[in-house]
Length: 337
Ligand code: ADP
Ligand code: MN
Ligand code: MN
Ligand code: MN
Ligand code: MN
Image 1 (cartoon, helix red, strand yellow):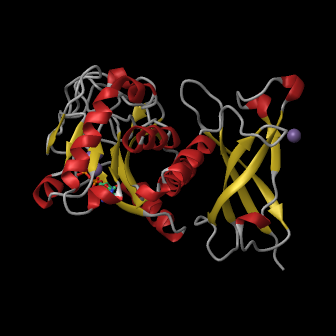
Image 2 (tube, helix red, strand yellow):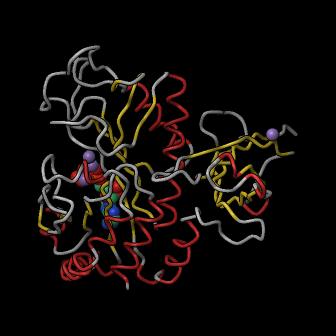
Image 3 (tube, helix red, strand yellow):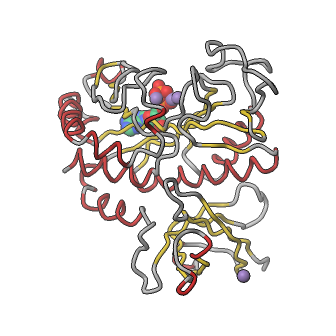
């Protein structure tokens, strides 16, 4: 039987924003369940996760998908949690706390969908931007078409196709307001599935960018000035919100979110102050407000939800570089608590 190349993927301990890491392990044959995947180890002193003296940390496989970049093989991508040598979750492991909270509130049947925005860079400039100066001001780029309007579509489309081929629940993509800025959406899914798939989709985006010499950044304000920042809007619904009278449940959730605004901002991504200015379709970082169809609010209730009297809400505050494990965890704690 052909051996299998398993790319073990994990999240490191960089501050203020953790990054993805991976290394490949050869397995003797095809894998049929996650329990067949062996634990592995890595040098935590090279990933900001341990000191040199006691550097070995464990990689515990928690989900795997076919590697869509290696069609026709049984090769896989393996998402891992980082564990201490004694098997307890490492401090950098934000998935373990989400696992516990999601289990506790499982009966609420909460669905999440995140809109991952990102900016493509070539060298130190956004892709397609002129050597000197700036492109024409924003206005024509959002959902634009044509080589003067959008930059990087080939990568964007290949990435979407790869996600679908791997079984990731990507539900759409669009060109964003700033040129070279794009978005893909994941969901709706349970919190753990959504966050896992978003991290895997991020890994694929970076990996596929290597083929094009293009890098994606999740910095919330990659270009200073009159250019849109980069966010990760988080859409949420509990079962009660999706049923008749759900709008009342959504409004009650918004009041709970108001009471914990600062706590949420703490885990909504580094440098988010640069993005949540009150301009460029945001509310200022120190203000909480919600409203129907209001893209200048912290929480937007989509028009469809208001009209139907049930549905979901959108938290517009998370930055593109947020950790979806942390965002989903605090959201569940606040609205289901
Ligand atoms: P926007 O109009 O804000 O740009 P998008 O179409 O980009 O919206 O994204 C909508 C997101 O909402 C997607 O991630 C989708 O999975 C998610 N979503 C749709 N329905 C629900 C729901 N009932 N509960 C939670 N999330 C949902
Ligand atoms: Mn070595
Ligand atoms: Mn969107
Ligand atoms: Mn967007
Ligand atoms: Mn949105």
